[in-house]
Length: 343
Ligand code: CP
Ligand code: NVA
Image (tube, rainbow, N blue to C red):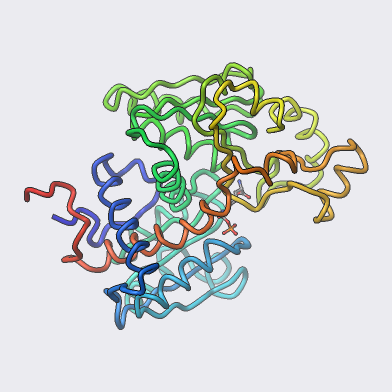
């Protein structure tokens, strides 16, 4: 049975651990077939609309490139390029687009917008990032961790360091809890996840036997970890005037060589959803170097460029997992997406 058929992806945790694993299995199969030049196109004549109220490189291109491979067509509606939010409500937009398209991707600000789109569209809605969650990124991160660690999810240990009440912090905490992993979140008190997210994580952990640590001590969080994740210290939509305060709060959580060594696992891997400030090749990265004499903000250049870094494998997996998501939600009878193979 294909659980995903006609379902939306809003937070990820509305789906079960087994259903997520089935989707990762499909992504792995589509990835292997693609690399072997033997991909089956499941999405001929399907149409997907991509609404972006924030910028994107990976997410937009993953949807477009995966659609191309699968025979589907996309329409891109960039920031300020539709009536949504100004002259037309979310519900009306959803009802209209649901009549034109087979699925809707939305990237924007409030989680309630993507929830409302899903409520009214009548077709699957994919959350391509909100202020609170980034579930398509979670699919890529899980596939990447599975590819680079010879353990079941339950036995994997990962830490996330930095702004832990942003979309990546919330999503990694809940995803790790759903999958039964050993999850460590390290952030200053002011940037730790909201109580409601922590409560949800503990509820999921009761079922999955996940272990959850939320701490302000980076060193405790990374002990014996298989993976160390971080993200930008200032997310899209946040006031650039907050940079100074963020740097002050988050400097102890910067992923540098010392921290990678202190974790105690010589094979530890570094992960980042990207884009990352990891050198002087951006205006913000250069300014940080001028002010602090350091190459890379949330991650040191030496870590980002090291053999421990999985960031480009992770980015590539955005495409394979988004492809699997579209195939599973739009093609009922796709193979390799059975939650229970005996059914
Ligand atoms: N990781 C991620 O979502 O990248 P984009 O912002 O480029 O889509
Ligand atoms: N937290 C980041 C993630 C970017 C993919 C942001 O929202 O800007």
